[in-house]
Length: 293
Ligand code: GLU
Image 1 (cartoon, rainbow, N blue to C red):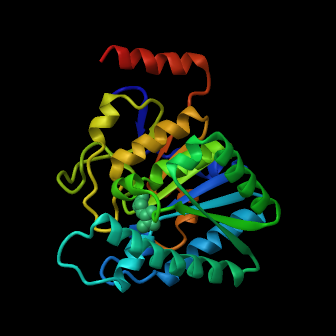
Image 2 (cartoon, rainbow, N blue to C red):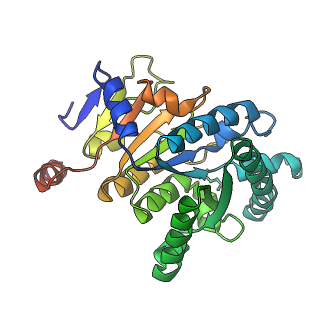
């Protein structure tokens, strides 16, 4: 196993707490499998309350939090036609349009109960590629943070066809992190993090707690998620990690399924941290290890 990765040890709990505590600006990405019940497609209200309590706790101690949430398609599909086949893109877009309203309503109500407003941004990759639109989005996010409203971002599924097919919210979240110079990107998913092998196939698969270089060894560990409401899987999470690391932003993948998912990371729950290069020497060491493969 290469020196660029670590497995769970006693220091990781303290490190996770320090990394989260010292972040000035955080992006929290919520996967569909967390926000929507896998069987009914209903929003998991009690779980959402605990997530928002965590978010509010971060804000109360002076940190800025931007939420990137999936789930519109999963939630909207429930109200849509009962299909006995995979929905087509147009049907998914209609489901997203329905589900997005319910999703925002749930976030808004939960934050309102705690005295916070929300602001919604629906973005596509093209919005971020376009310098003018990207600057506008950044300015909107900064203004929302300034007035104490919690920004909530999702893909604009109604206009984006590539994103909705590939489950791109992981990458979108990383690009938002880059856009606003976030310190930490938290990807809450239904997996504990990156494993040496697929833990469903191999009970001896080990959790990797820290990655400092995404090399072929790491890429080989990323399997494909089969979760019903999770379109991204570990492959898009690694893509997101590359974007975040290049932007100097730390990224953590953790299982958000339990209550108070952010507190769980702080308390040293299972997770995989991706640490950006601190200096040119570590960047070169990673590049060298890639060229040797
Ligand atoms: N934007 C889609 C939704 O809200 C999900 C895409 C993804 O999970 O990355 O359902």
